[in-house]
Every structure is written in structure tokens, then in C-alpha cells.
Amino acid sequence: EPESEEEPSEISEPEEPEIRGGIVPEKDNAGFYSFKDSLFVGDYFLSQVHSLGYFDNSKFAYTTDLDMNTMLTKKVIKTEEGYVTLTDYVETFTDKEVEAVYIVISAESVSWMDVPTFVKKYTTFVEEIVSVYPKAHIYVQPIFPINEEKAAKRGYSVTNEKIRQINEYIFSFAEENSIWILDMYEEFADKNGMLPAEYTTNGI
Image 1: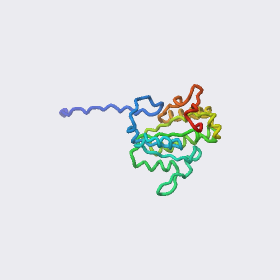
Image 2 (image 1 turned 45 degrees about the vertical axis):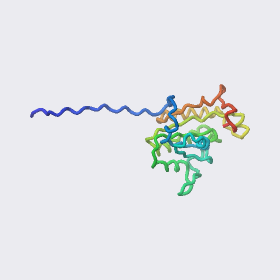
Image 3 (image 1 turned 135 degrees about the vertical axis):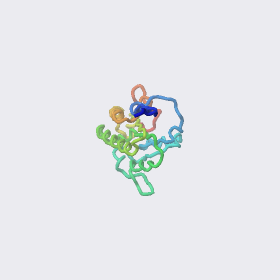
Image 4 (image 1 turned 45 degrees about the horizontal axis):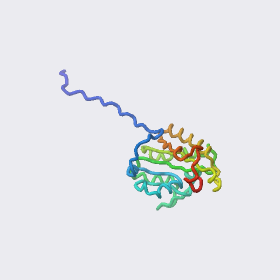
């Protein structure tokens, strides 16, 4: 048979796998428009962030009436269909463009729990978010340090040592599950690893 005159098709090189997870590298601030396809999920801490107005182009799912113990179970967010849990509310954004999800939990959500209990509930919560947005980039940040003296006066029993232990688990979990880490703890700590008193009114 005569040889074909068709050119052999080019063999395409395999695409490089997308790198996800680990410490987010530092880069220049891209401005608030870079967060327009972002969803922020968390506890009361986000009410402070939301009120700043810097993230007006972003989506928010949070409530001031939850801690890590009730994040998955307590129905406190009002919708047209009735009250739902935070994770159920997160699902209402799936019809919108969400490229990144930022999970923000404060020291107050540590509450009365011991470290293993908190970590178990935290990882379950993050896994729920990942299951809703499997294609989005997921970001977690450490729980920030507190000012123990002010916190104790307000009745909070959590300590910076406990927070550091929890953050070690959070970082390890994130690295194992291709989740980005916003490594900002040291930005809010003084030389003793404590949140400076002038930065806080209630210690946390």
C-alpha cells in the first residue's frame, strides 16, 4: 500500500498538575477586585472583616452565634426556607462563581473544648466545605494569638499555648489535603507570642 501523505499528529505533552496546598507565597496586593469570586466562611470574627467594606465584592457565610462545637449542627442562619446550619447556608452559593473559599475561625470558637475535640470538629467542618466546593482553592488561616490578661478578665479560658497546638494540627491537616495556608500568626504576635494589648478590647 502507498504511504499516507498525512502528517503524523503531534503528540501533546501531558499538562502539569496544578499545585495546591502549603504555605501561600507572599505577593503584591492585587486589590479587592481579586476577591470578587471568593467566599468567606467562619464565625463572628468575619462580622468584623465584613464591616470593613474592603471585601464588598465577596460573598460571606458566617454568624455570631456559633462556636466550633455547633458549627455543623446549630440552625441559626435565617433563609427563605427557614433556619439552616452554616454548612447548609454555604451550599446556597453554589450557583454563583466561587473560585476560592477562605475559612476563618477565631479563638472564641475554641471555647471549652480540648485540643483533640476541637481538631476533630474543625477538620470535619473543613471537609464539609471542600465537599461543597471540590474545585475551588481552599484557604485556612491559623487561629490568631490572644492577649491572655485581657481574655481572662472577660472570662475566656483559652491560652496561646492551646492555640499553638491547634494551629500545628490545622497546618498538618491542610498540607495533607492540598489546602492553602495563610501563615499570619506571627504578624499578630509580640516577642512573647502574645497579641499586644492595644490591638484588642476583649483579649481575643
